[in-house]
Length: 109
Length: 109
Image 1 (tube, helix red, strand yellow):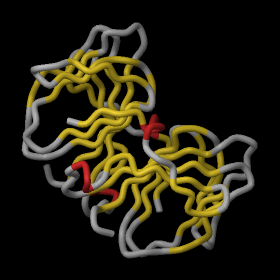
Image 2 (cartoon, rainbow over the protein chains, first blue to last red):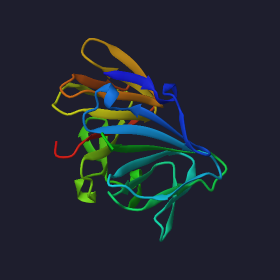
Image 3 (tube, each protein chain N blue to C red):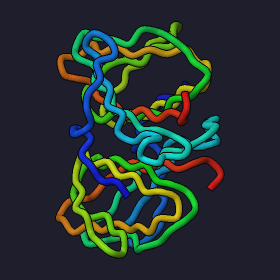
């Protein structure tokens, strides 16, 4: 059993204003899936993209939008988002607070 | 893409004072893992048990303890817990607020 605080995991800046923390990974012994926590600063975004693996997301705090290329859906604390494999998606923080969310992906992606 | 509020998922009472919401499941098309949100009322607990699948957990709010049978580790908002397959574990809410956490498991367990 590993118990930690997610903030103790080193933040990795992946885009301007977007930070990722890999809080549970294969290095911890996770056999099937990894948990990450993202923080998107106000005015920042993750551009539309797609990949062969799914995302399972829960918003921890803040507000923003999830993008599909066709529509923009508002999300906020307690929103749950399932993005299927190969589905286009992006995120935008159009609020004045950081947008924080958990995003789980399969191991080995 | 499915976007919802986790509170819109029907709560299932699994033990006295313990409620589970299955917020992303195979029925949504999730191919590998499922996301659930648990709420443990003050004074309630999930007894020690084990099973062949892992848990990946993040505490959303409240305080409590994760139990291993040998030790009791305090957890609170932002705690991350990895429980390996077949590892004994339980949870107790020894605080005065509900303890809420995400728990991800493989599909088909």
